[in-house]
Amino acid sequence: MQNMGKMYKKIKIYDILLSVIVMNCLFCNICNGKIESSTIYEDDIVRVIMDINPTSNGHVLIIPKNHYDDFCTIDKVTIVHIHKIAKLIKKNIYDALNPDGLILTNNYGIAQVVKHYHLHLVPVYKDKQEILDINTVYNKIIKSII
Image 1 (cartoon, one colour):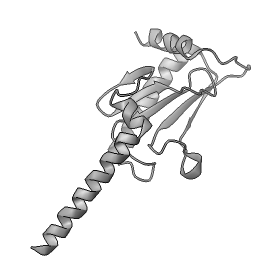
Image 2: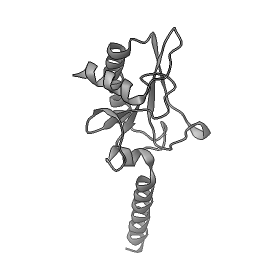
Image 3: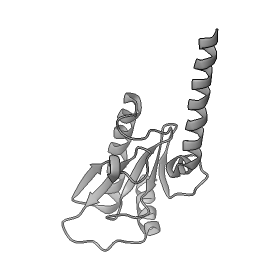
Image 4: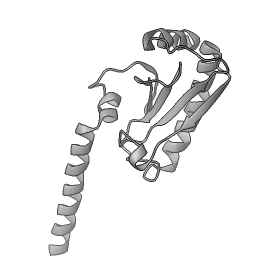
């Protein structure tokens, strides 16, 4: 019976730590609506938003709503869903912005600024593009979805 108490305490401590991480996680707060974002797609598993510091026009992030630190901790069902949505969003980006290519990337370790797994979709253009206002690009992508 004493071991049950220790196990309960470990589970409770884990739950408390996870809730603190989620409360302080930028992407968790975006996914649960506490922080505004330019959302171009959302379902029960992910939210797709415009990157606020885009490296090209149409740079978006696919963020799972559940907190996963990085690609080593995310479950198979969620990662497959993220890539399914990436295909869908790629079509919208191509329809709206006509890029010449697309980079899909995620960062890990010290390269990962926000410690919540997310996939970047970064359009690539043959000709140098001036980075447009996020709202302008957002509106173009949204129009391609409707």
